[in-house]
Image (tube, rainbow, N blue to C red; front, side, top):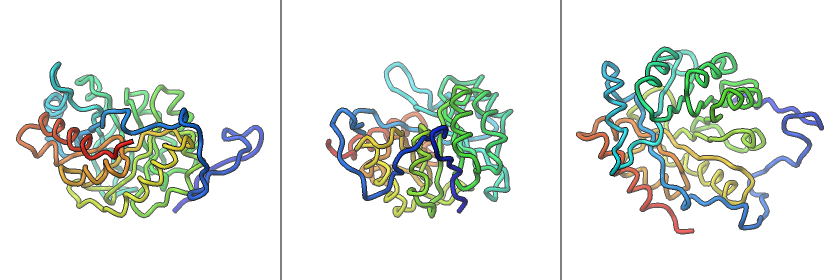
Length: 266
């Protein structure tokens, strides 16, 4: 695991402050608390499970109607066959999708050298661009550049990557994407142990120490979404559970309803 690049000192992007540590978080006022119950669960269908010959139609199938809200984000998995052993799509497809749908694009970059490529996805119209902590050298620079380009900055952690080394870096990110399978292929089984990371992050959000949207990706279906929602996830990436269903739009609604029902009371 590559350690995050973090500069200290009065002119540092982070500044001189006490580092966050799990298990050492003090209570704060209720005004600083952000509750999952205050937001509707977000569903981000993954086009990795869609029909690549019909991507515009597949996006439209989850767009929703006036009476039935559709997908909140459209999750786009970008893989380079280096960081992960699979090759999917890149900027031209993202640009085509941006022209074909109004659903905000959530680009998940499973690639090497994200410092070089991430901003291009923001400039192509992605709403949220997520890079992997394990692939990046300058995480602070990536967050700064993505935000400057008008996108949300997301940081993803593989199942075996701990949260604690990245707590200070996460102050500069908008989204934490917890991988609940090994990245690289869709259709894998959900890893329940990854929910411990979600609970850690949710505690830091609830106590006002981080301001993040918590997203989960991997093995999410009508059963596992309840576990993830109970742990504190805000946004759920679902591939096969949406695009293998007879009605993709209805599947989005069903998943959202299940997540909402499973959320703990606050």
